[in-house]
Image 1 (cartoon, rainbow, N blue to C red):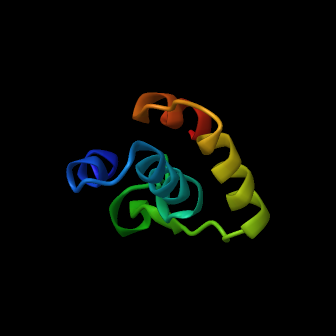
Image 2: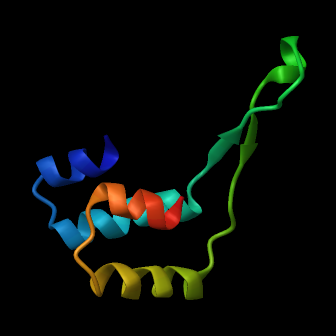
Length: 77
């Protein structure tokens, strides 16, 4: 939904891809705890650390290709 929202707001495909890729790589995510029940089963929040070199590599990858949202998910997932 985020990528489509960027495009609907008039952002270019490349810029939308860069924003989406940045969130996919560096944004927070939640990991389920398998085998636990009750309050201990609450998903654990993981916050990857931002790395400028990795972001620059991501930008080069995105700017060098004609990516769609599904391809980005496969590449970054």
